[in-house]
Image (tube, rainbow, N blue to C red; front, side, top):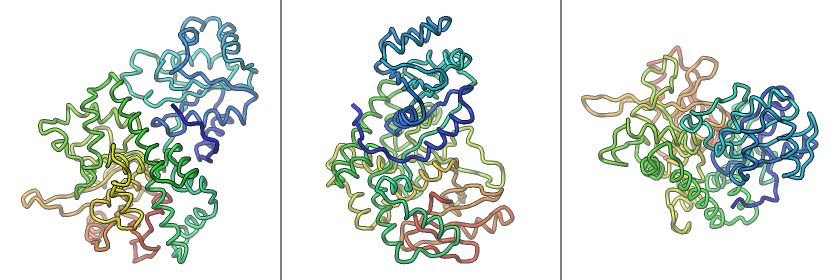
Length: 452
């Protein structure tokens, strides 16, 4: 059961929803996509309360058949449909001043199909929320309306986390110093401490709420374990892919990220595993937005392409706070070594997976797809060059290295620049120190991943 939050968090997606209302409604419905418990319904209700004269929230996990059937049998009599909704939900609808929210629409895809007719009517605006609604098998029997504007909702980022703590100053400082490439100075230590808090709590609104209310990581971990249990239930209840295969991939994410190269090796999950058998389950997790996958780029000079799942991929959790709890599933948080490592600033060796995961999370929130580069000597079976993340800015390749150890090498960055010289822009190293620059290599604190 959802916990009612008595704090309204400021979310960046809210401004994008307002933009939809002003520029695209009533011609387009807004589809809020995201993982379970990421805050989609809260955002939809917030705009209903603040920007409309009235709104109706239809929860398809609770709506009776009489309400569901309206979206099938009353499309030729919309007056009856709207009148019934008003009476059932005890909320008056006002033409061009009311919002109808279709919550968890993946549970009743026919309502999604009905939107074409509802939008042609133009009396009201419509927001859909869905956790798994984009999965093709779930929607293959319906006609998906082309008049649908999709907006991805991700976990709260570091700036939103700081806002939740009542801090509206620190991130402005971060952005200003990043733009000027000027060292943060004395504030760096406090920002690193806040970022470690963010790693532990994560960006799921319920977990952030619990932390703001209690400052108790045990209570926060209890919330996150509950979300993970919900994900497991979703996996068991879905009918698109083999649940055991999906769970095999999901539960092994921490152990695979703790490997030296972070690459996901399916043989560790199942000695007889074949990519063709696991491609569907992996795509299910991607579509549910509970994971982020990074693809190996064989030729960085060419256009990046993520149309298929390459055998050499990395699989990150969509929320780093959940990754920390997943690593010690069903254990008391006091036995979770990652809490100790992060709080004591000892993020080295295997714990480096946390820094790489949160970097992937921040890049994905910025709209970047995830890619990495690895070149090996097949005869010697040695890695020659490896870049943790590749993004594009101004038609230039931007390599990003994430360093969690005090002893690190820049040989891969230098080789990469040499191999693809004309196509490479600035090169970034994310580490625990302050901003500094050495020619074209920019050193940034971990917490600046979100401003790249």
